[in-house]
Image 1 (tube, rainbow, N blue to C red):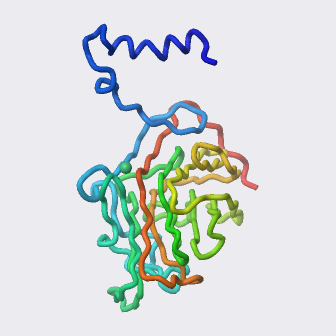
Image 2: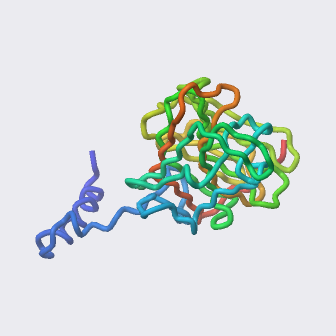
Image 3: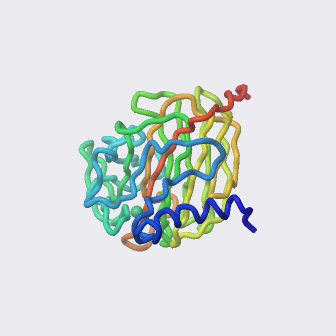
Length: 276
Ligand SMILES: [Ca+2]
């Protein structure tokens, strides 16, 4: 039950913008500034809600240093079957739609791919080391696909700064996603955990990345914490890979993204934990 103070605080904006001011209530409310579920004070530093007409190429690019083949594919290196290209990333109806298609493509280096799909990175428009990041996404239900929302070291980085907010293999463990922090600085520690999810439905996957560790969130609830944390700037990546270990039987699948956001914490951060 609300306290009298909270009740007043709730009704005050309605009174000020309501009939006493001569204005309709609903049209005068400013949009609520989104805030992350993690503790702290936050400033929104990156956002794409995909409401524009077409992909915002000031924010996103399709070539990533995480992809060895012309920065658009990983054939033979990372269990991926797809060639990533801009044609498979479409913005429509307030959503980013990444579509994997069974179609042949030969890369500039001569590698032959049987699938095309899309990977988008915020390099070079946005990089960060600590903060809260999230993606609201609907993952494919068809077996054989591998969507993810993750971070990757800025181009030139050599220490594998990587956090997988979610990785989902629709052909393996199809009601679970993995949240993972990778080693950095030559460390040997990899932390991952599995959590239930529901492909085909909208879910919000987030991570609070701090010097003292990383806490993963699903739909606003903390689900896992790891003690290691990055030490260098990273970019955001959203993608839909095709799983070489469980190749799809059908010819197409899509991942939809409603928004991607990143916040910077403006109050004090905990110091880094000692290296294990
Ligand atoms: Ca949207």
